[in-house]
Length: 531
Image (tube, rainbow, N blue to C red; front, side, top):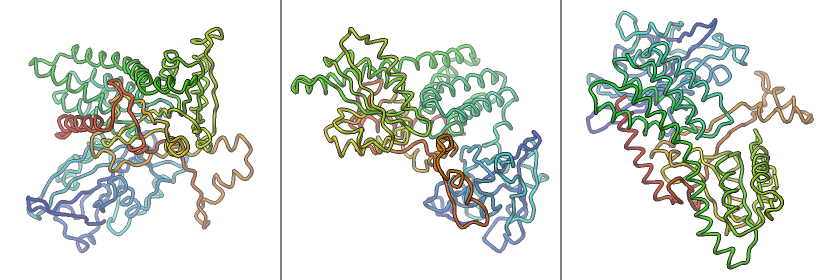
């Protein structure tokens, strides 16, 4: 346990703390591990009486500049010896603060929930838990029976921290079941883009609301359900989900203010309206791209007697696909030269090429006089693919308040190569404004690690020599060699490399993105700060 603290204007020492619960679902019964503090902790640091010899999760201070989730992993490893081999991050909870003036401290708690892996998942189960000197024992408990009561023997706010990751404590069975189902669907979906994932999240949210009609705390529960779908679904792609929920919550809030009686039919109708309206965003983005090309590229065509447009892209965005074809149809050029990076490990680039070819053949039959040249490049050939391109077209899974973009891995090499080899080319980001994040949202953003077998499987299928050695031959306790296969889906493209954002509200620059981010921050504070 570390002790990172500062003092604010109240005179209280400020201490940010992680509170990590370890869950197990052995035999179909969900249990949470609680740890009994050792008497030795008394001599380690100043602690109030209520923290000594009480049941608690794994906790400890956050050492600047580490992120809360990094601190959670560190504390768990120090106090239980558990590693990612044995556990996985399951949920994070909404932070909260409380103070104890008697000892001059205020704590800000960052709750997390980790799930213990069984042997069938490569883990060692509960035999891997080896407590250190800070604890004298640990046991499994039914999470629904954990209470903030002296007789239970937990540290103060134990149940408060737990309910922030285990929402089942505050929801009826049907509502919590709908929320769990939605979260599971979001976490398992590694093929849909953020726009599609947001639609899934909104549908799950609607399913939850249907079961909250008789909940006396329905408004707080509604907002917390939205928070969990944003944070615990696919947070790396969650900005779109957040913005969609902020719009929905604003509309529900308006309904709630106008009538003393909750009008559930109107609330559900609002959700249906938002789901229907999402279909319009893509068409507006297509219109923006068309207008942008006519204002920036058409003059070049006319001055250079140019009869071809050359584009570089990656991934499998249907919005980018349709925008390309619509714009090509409206431009006075007869040749479309399209370079597509294959986009490993899931090869979305190849899917994009196939889909675009099929659509082109429908829209431009041979008598049209329009011609398409598709070149599919390996990701490692980004520099070759970038030669003489007019535009690089990227999607976005998140846009920071500064205008930096997180997108499919391979985006940064494509942009860097283009800036070096074809400096006159423009980099365009296709995105709905719902993907703009609030300021500070990316300060503790962690890269999303995914199943390494997605990378390894093509090696095995191709019969790569020695691949079995890489898969696991050296990863044992007696070896001095470690092999890791990295499968990171997303990476950042800096704002200064983006020439324009193609959105439903027109072609925008970084200034407009910053304004949108500030508005998102105001709405986040309004609907989530009090939870």
